[in-house]
Image 1 (cartoon, rainbow, N blue to C red):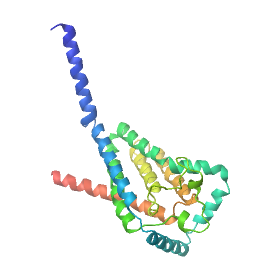
Image 2: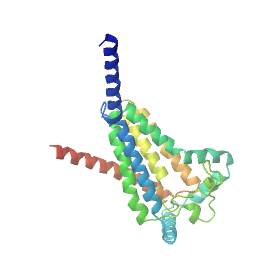
Image 3: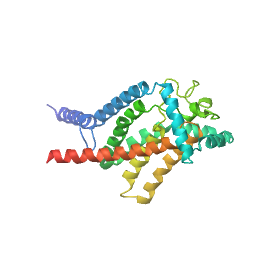
Image 4: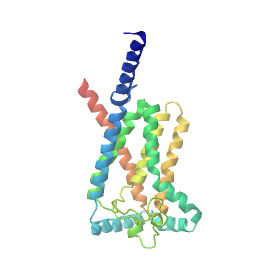
Length: 259
């Protein structure tokens, strides 16, 4: 065998090994990319199917919305109509608000990829938190269907439906229209902030706090567009906290099982 053939054989084995490591093996503390992508895709598909099947009882969703509105009035938190009227009075802000509302998934993907590539030490923790949120919220959607302000609060303008970036159909068409509690737009944006905060806190503690601006902006958007109540946002905060606690409990349990 000539030296050239030997060199080609070594190169071929090296490439094969590199592909194996990159696609199906853990590297640098990270899960295998191909396996990770497959698992996350499966989680997303299952969540979408189960979410779409939940909350079909319009009567119950409307009743729950009326009860929530009453509670907010008692707590002086009923700002949804005022917020919506403010946005409709400022048309130059409508397109940015709808873009913020619709394109949040870009932030989720970006944060997942960024933490996977640059912050492997926190990736597994924040990914488990994301999965925990998708699992824990489904029973709430099934047990507590909630009609959003744009359907249940007189005077609210459905801004996203009128100025939608993605479709000309009514806002939410083909999706679960009655899962306002908690707000998952808010929940996912809170998760993005939490993931970035976890990644940057050790090296850039002050910069890490800026990540929380994203969910603050989302809170303003979901209120002004008539998609959620103030208490929906509070429910999203509670969901993140419970999910973080669940992941910590799971990690503690698995450590004990290894001992």
